[in-house]
Image (cartoon, rainbow, N blue to C red; front, side, top):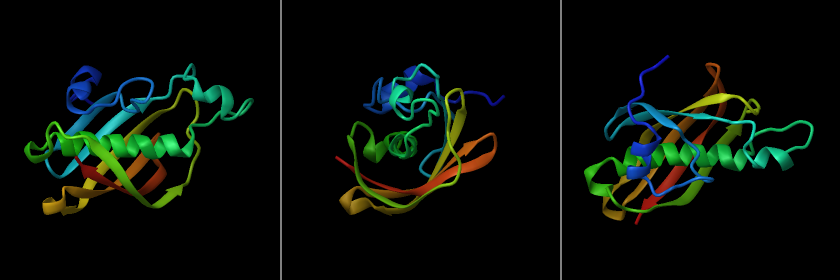
Length: 146
């Protein structure tokens, strides 16, 4: 098991998200200004599983993408130039869903900076979600730091 670099309480000091919309539990590693790896346990009691889908619950794709964005948020808001900003989602590109994420799964999310326009405070990150070491989701998330 990997050491925890940042627990949920420390994450809440960096990003503005709170339950029930906080989609990461811990930061496992981070190379400031470059890359990050987080995790999220999908408690079977999470309310969205009741309706998505009864009898065969899966994590909604939009929430998977949200976990990718929040992982990028922690990376970016940990940088001095973006500390204290509000990360606004302004783009989602090339997202591919390859495997289901189900109740009881623990996912790991990796993100790295792909492109940054410092003068506009806009950053695109490549993100990948893993379950049991296998890729479930890939894509690009673009955030405006305001």
